[in-house]
Image 1 (cartoon, rainbow, N blue to C red):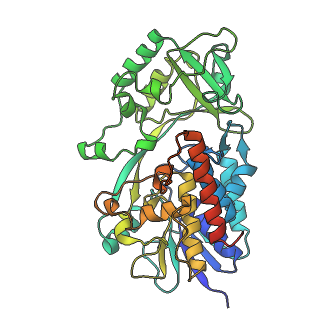
Image 2: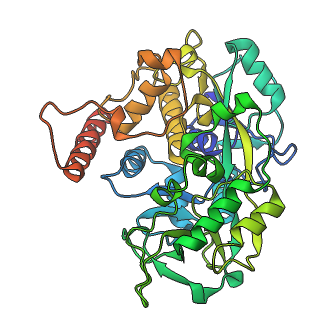
Image 3: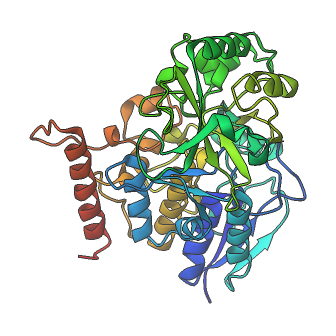
Length: 433
């Protein structure tokens, strides 16, 4: 009789874990509380709904996000397969049509003969079988209390979502297509501002009415998805070195040079909806329409989704988990996804793969520290001493990998060397060489 496994949470990590185990003959019960009980950020009934953005970042192997994808492919990631099937043009990045992606993933998971999806909120941790908790950063209050009571106080940070607008409401005479900072194809829609226009936008952004934060909450805004207002508060030039960076984005016809450029990324395959890249916000709804409407070409923008901010919950993983994403002292219980303190879509899915791989291979001791997957494992475990004191969410980055003995001065060459070394190490671990 095949072993039964419980997975709590139907996000990217939960779906990745469920598919990996089901493909290997495990009988999986996947619990997802939506649509019976919705979260403050989700909008659909589908498993794997993407909340913050439709971009899964770069596919180039000499980038940290590209390397992670390459490693996940070697493990048979279902998230990447569905993402590639439902992708939209985004230069060197992998971006998807969100609802189509979630609907396709939902269908794959629900129709797998070894997976039973149960739409019900779980409030207690099962102890009679192996279990992976992948409830994500929007874990329900009741289940979060259960986790807190068993593993101590849990931490949190605040995450923000960027607005989406209708393409036919954009003044296309003021916009132009070009690549994202001269990387990849001309898949991004660009709107430039001169110095006067940018300063006016900036001043109104800073003065706009916003959702209030308590003082202690200001310490817990995730750097990688920071509200545009928080970023702008660091100084008027900050946005022009970040999401509004104008480098390489002169108008292709007039050759006009801009002080700041807003980039918009396609949200669906039809190209009827665009995401305001880097404009995640905590402005109140009426202020979003007013302030973003100051950008030339967006005066009459129709908002299909307004930006928002929500609380993300995560555990102090280094005190709770080992490098297998397994609870220390309980070999049947695992955590996966953003609740562990990995940050980003692909990192969340990767942790689901790691937890499932560990569960399916009792002899497994972890992937090499030279790999992206091994680096994520070390991040969540107590192997990095400083994480035990102050643990914050993190994406995978090359700084997590051991340095080369011989210094490589060229940055691109160095990143390519990291990727080559990592993939060779992972293939060795998987015995694919």
